Length: 312
Image (spheres, rainbow, N blue to C red):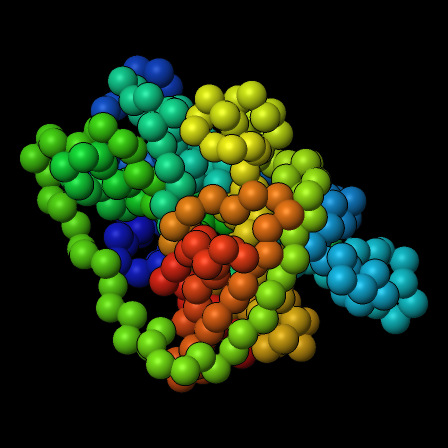
């Protein structure tokens, strides 16, 4: 069965039937990318990785006695569990890093991680191994650049059970104008008007980017002040998926009793980078059983927009 470009929970071919990627079959950005296999990436994790990730997205920072099921593995009555957004590491390894290797004649510095979504199908174990299969599912010519969506399916390496489906939308500045479809416009956000149902603030640490990069995302733009300035920033920026993970963790705590098994979905558009030490001001509106949300910094600048969170 081939993956559908229309349903985020559709299943791809089993990884064992996926072709290998080589330098000879890289290609430029264009419609020919559609439904092309990117790569199947194998990865594994231990309890230590889960603990480091939880600390990286702020678990236990406000109160070390809280969220011990994510920050410790030896607390009485609280077996270690895994924050659902931990799976984004595997998805980004395949859907971003491997996708960039697939493309040629593309300036990787022109890439911006534009949007991210995560659909959880089953809770992650505290240690395990996965194979992440990824395909290009949308390619749009935006004129000034190109937007490319990859879809990653994260499966248990032994049983093939599907843990999560993740969509990554990447924008490449200066790589448009090849005559492809422009794609859909921005979605309507009627639910994100009027009086908000939810408001709260998440503090971030001045060293949070240094802590989060231990879980991946080793670009010097998150750690090297000189490199960040050359990239046009005042200083190192916080990983977008760290901001998303921090928000997802807080939503999980507030609206799903901190139970990872109840987590269903989170998504957002990355509107601007946060800096370590920023406050994340979250505003949300109820939309049926889901929450539509946005995140701004302490200066009112939008960081995450068009966000959505769903849990049982």
